[in-house]
Length: 347
Ligand code: QUE
Image 1 (cartoon, rainbow, N blue to C red):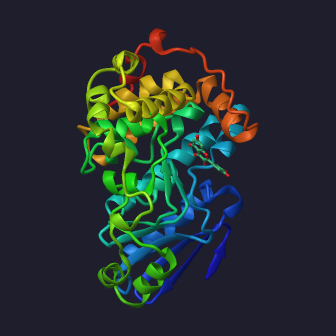
Image 2: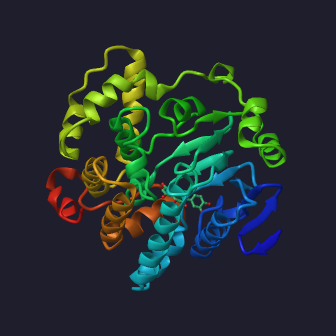
């Protein structure tokens, strides 16, 4: 193992292994970690002795909780927006390399997977989840938008793109069943480590044959997203954020189960920056029609703009620095925000 900061890389058999090792920050990705991952991908792409790439975490608490947005907030607040701009530019270039990679990329999604954690897994061929996987795209709560290519990926899953927009707007916590329903997870195992070892000793197909289990083996095999898919598609399928918000307000729950779901949705949306919701809706609708490279450019344009609004520093403060979760976003409601403000930034 070479030990370059928080990313360890090695070759096991025919597999190039990237191990994230920044457990105290739930493996949130710093700029140097992004560069190290990309360097490994570049080296292995032309190496005929490497048949697959495996990405895993040294900790069972988290695969990766996102980008190091605390660090970005600090450089932003010091007036150095260029540092953050370059961080995201390099991160998205690495995400694009994964999306265009010729070899299987296998991610072992044990524990927390958020934001940038999806950027280093969702573009790969095998998204291996366990009963302990918890996924989310919670960027709206920090005044940002789903990025790392996810505004594109979430439009091209085996489920309707409206479910992707719902996941982004609410920051919905995806259970293992939700992960399988959406396709964000496409292999379920009971033990990620055994799968990883089998992969290095044999092949992706053999490891999958030996270790994958069925969704019905989950303690809760029911996906709440699946149960509420019709409402989500009817509500999030068309229009600007303001149209979606009006449809949510107008919903009368049909039964107790839906009432409970709607309560949860309303609570999660209250934590979101209204400008993020407006921007996200425009970004997702546009990126449903673009290729992944263009989608990443659109994310960079919208993300860089949002980072220059005070809501980003405020959201990161409330969620990650002070952890009071009492963000005061301005404007506090979406009615005054013109979607064109963000739509005009998109290719
Ligand atoms: C939105 C985000 C992130 C987030 C929470 C959000 C994010 C991120 C982290 C995170 C979590 C735990 C840590 C850490 C960072 O949380 O990108 O260092 O220990 O990295 O609502 O985008």
